[in-house]
Image (cartoon, rainbow, N blue to C red; front, side, top):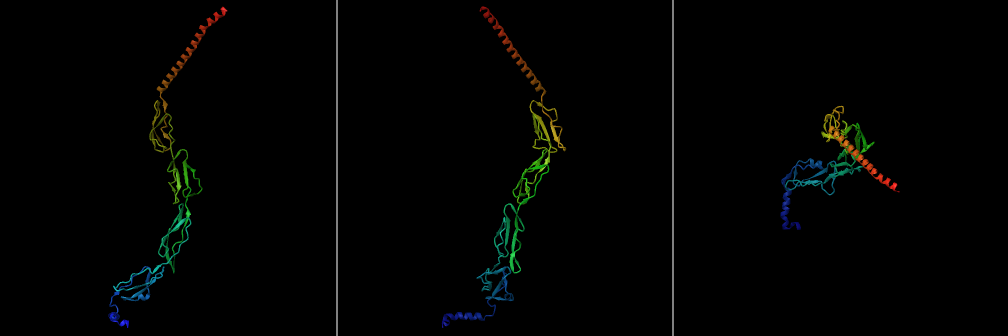
Length: 319
C-alpha cells in the first residue's frame, strides 16, 4: 500500500506521538481576545484552557450582523497565539434619512455607531439637533434624533428713536434684507446708517442711535479754527476766526451746553471799520470823478455850439 512506503513511516510515527501526548503539552493560548463587534459563544466562555489547536466561536454583538464569507472563529496557533481576527461582523445600517429641505445631510457612514450632520442653505437656520447617531433600539438600529428642519432667517423689526427709515420699510425682514436710517433735525447718528439682517437672526452692524446735537455752525465770512466736527454734542469746544478784513466783536471760543445751545452765542464776523472808511473814500472819489467827466463833456459840447453859430448867420445875410 502507498501509506506503507518507507518514506511515510517517520511521518506516521510523528502523528501518532502527537496524538498520544497529553492535552496542552504543545502549549496553550490565553483568554481569547475581546472584540468590539462580537463576543464569545457561551460554550467558549465556559472553557478555562485553550491548548494549541483549540478553536473558539464568536457571535455578533447587538447592532452588528454577520459578513458573508467570513468565519466567526479564532484558533490557538502553534506559537501559542490566537489567529488574527477578521471583520466577520459589521454594523447594521440605520438607512438613509430623508432629504433636508433647504439644507444638506452630511453622511460618511450609515452603520451602527456612525454620526451624520446637518446644515442649512444660506438664508436659512437649523431648528433641531445638528447631529444624529445610529444607535440600538431594542433589536434594531435607528437614528437617535429626528431630522431637524431649516427655516428662513428672520430679523426683528428695528426702529431708531429720534430717527426714521429711509429705505427698507418692512414689515418683515429676512436674510440679507437691509434698512437705511436717518436722524431727525437736531440729532446725529451714532453707528452705521445701513444695517443688514444676518444668518444668526441679528442685525449687523448693530442698530444705530440718534444723539441730540447743538446747532450746526454757519459762520459768514469766518470759519472754525479748531475743534471742527460734522456734529457737536454736549461738552464740545470750538474756536472761531474771521477771514481777512473782518473783525469779531464777540468771544471766539464757544462750547455746546447741556441745553444743546452754544455759549457764548455764535459770534458774527463784521467788516472792519477801516475797510468801511476806505470803501467810502473810494466811492466818493469815484462819484467825484464821474461828475467831473460829465461836466467836462457837457461844457465841451456848449463851446462847440457857440463857435458854429456866426458862420450860419453870415451865410444867411449873404444870400
